[in-house]
Amino acid sequence: MQNEEEFNSFMSALADVVGQVVKPGAAGPPQSGALEQVRDWLVPRLDADAGDRAATAFGTLIRLRHIRVGTQHADARHKAVQAFREIDLPFPPPSWTHTWTHIAVMARGALDALREEANAGLRQP
Image (cartoon, rainbow, N blue to C red; front, top):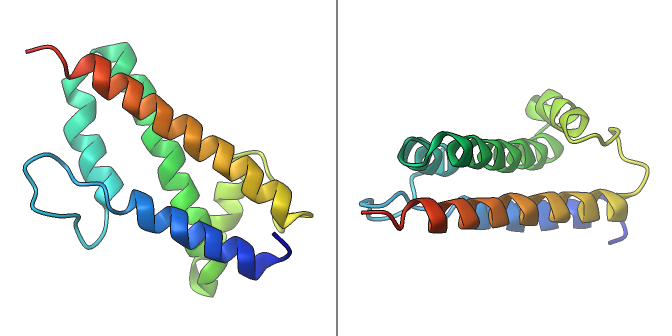
């Protein structure tokens, strides 16, 4: 990754993927707020510890979405600055490659946590 333009492209791809989540029973992803809808459906169905871990994972993914919106839309730049702070990265970042690597690791960790908690917590009848 060489520059902010490539970073923005990667962030758009990540946002597109996580924006396609669909809460059970829905015909397709909503126009906006897909993560929030799945979070609001899933978290109450898990025990307290699993629900907390899942809520934290959703929060991470939502924060990453704010970075994507903020870096590509000037009127939302303040959201990106705040989201960068929340994930312990400076803004503007000194290295787009390092920033993407950090974000990719965070996204994977959040998705792994959601998969683990959903698989363990939703198996119960």
